[in-house]
Each structure stands twice: as C-alpha cells, then as structure tokens.
Image (cartoon, rainbow, N blue to C red; front, side):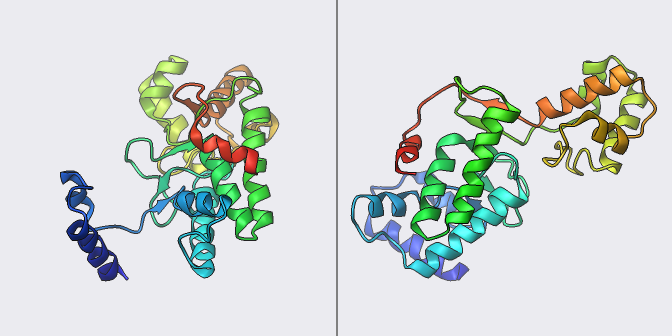
Length: 240
C-alpha cells in the first residue's frame, strides 16, 4: 500500500509537473496520519449530482478511521481535528490540532451520505455541546477550537503564584489522577462538576484554590482558534 501511494504521487508529478510546487517533493514519502477532512471533494461532487471519487467501501473505511482517530481517540468532547497521528495522538504540525467548526459539518455530511447517521449525529452533538454548553458562545461562534494546549509547571507557577516545587507536585498529581493526560493536555473527559474533580484530585489545597484550578483547567482544554469567520466548509451546515 505504501509503495503504491508513493508510485502514484510520482506519476502525478510526471503527468503534471507544473501543477505542483517544489515543496511537493518533500511529502512524497507519505505517512499514515489521519486527515480529518479527507473526503471533502468526494462529498461535494456527490452533493452536486456526481458519483463521487471513491468506491463506497473505501469511503466507509476512511470515515471510520477519521471518526475513531480524529474524534473519539483525540478530541471526543470537541469534534474532528484537522490531523492526528495514526493512533489518534496529537500531531505537532501547525493547526493540526485545530477542531474547525466547518470541518465538523463537512465530515458529518460525508457520514450521512455514507449511511452513517448515528456517527454523524454524535459528531454534531459534540459541536453543539462545545458551543452552547462548554464555551457558551451561541452568537459568536469561533472558527474552531484547539485541544492541543498543554498544562506545564511554568503555567501553574504563573497562574497561581506558587513555587516551582508546589507546581510540580500539582502537575504530577493531576497526571496521576488522569485529570491531565500524560502528554500534558487536559483530559477531554474531565468533569465540569467541581465535586467530582475534588473527589478525584485529592491534593491538599484550600477549596477556593481548588475551584480556581478546576476552572482554569476547563478553560485551558477549550481554547478558541483564529477569528469568527464563516468558512466555506460551513456551507455544508445547510446540506446537513
């Protein structure tokens, strides 16, 4: 499979050398990263009456892969990230971790076209909850969210005015109790209920300080990206 993909990319370059920039040669080696909006062109063609680009089994397999890696494994509370590694882990490329609102609608449309209604609804539910329940910005939707912001020892020192040893202790406790993932990101499953957080995070600190930490963690796990744009991908919201 890998050799076939490389061969096809070389063939494309031979057929249309003026279409690609010099940078195209740098990505000829390919990878198994998961691209969230991989079926955008296929969905568009189907919506205007064409048969699409790919066979149904390939579309279904690709959508299942995206749904599992970019959504359920990576950012289950927000939606489909632009790109993840093959196991759903964060990709460090620029804007890879962004969860763009427009991409959610185009991906949900692709799921519906493929007969995956339940998955499409689960994805749109995540968008609704992120906008209206977590972010609470119903009339000022951002371009998207970013779930790659990590919690560091320096952040805790700066935000809570504590010494480095205390910050390190907090961070280790947060990771040990799975409030923060091993890579430093806020656990997407972190409860918004303070009592549940307090029960899990047993570090001895005043309640008021614990409440501030909990609120800060929730805010850190739901950052806005860019401005409030109406991207072309959001046109799919009308189709959906």
